Image (cartoon, rainbow, N blue to C red; front, side, top):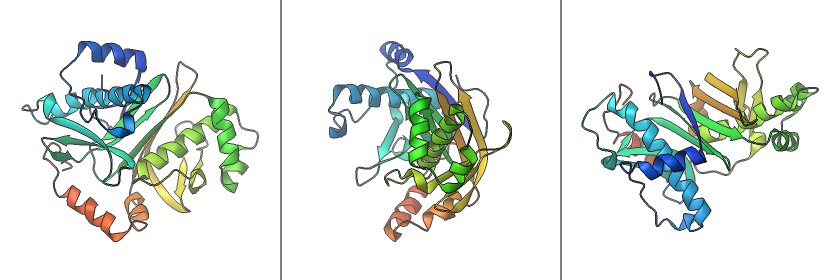
Length: 258
């Protein structure tokens, strides 16, 4: 259950827990089941559980702003007009809810993060195999990351990799993941914020959460503000920027940030 509003809110659940929930809870309609991207049965189930997870956890927050919301009026969209995966977008009666949402999964868990502040970007990632994450960081790290990680533990490597993935999800607009473009330098203390860069542009990290999960994996979630929008918008083609402007103009009034 998501509690009182926070700058960055997140939740995690196992696939088995969500299967049980969905079997006994039919009020959240999962649409687009004929999407050809999910013809595979296992992928289709994960897709269905992911949408149920988002809708069921976001619904209580929506009800704090409006009392006339029917779960059937909500829809999650995770692909752009070109069919490429993007950050999840929440629609209420066909109008965009201007919240920032991110979703991650492994073979056994799903995690979500969101912020009601439309001026920020959020990303979340799960790592279920710290050893594999450490190998990935060694292959796709910047010179500064390699220098900082000398002599560090496997857990630190897993943190860096999960934060790289979370950065990608926060900034992604349908482009492929190129890990070396996302740089993460860990803070000197558990309470500090990491230094993050995208294509050598420094980003403003406003909130960061890293959690060692009971399963032995890691969860990383972050909220970006300040220059993250202008850093990435300058890379888009003009027509993409125009589409985002049009989308922002049709948001529904569910929060102070709309």
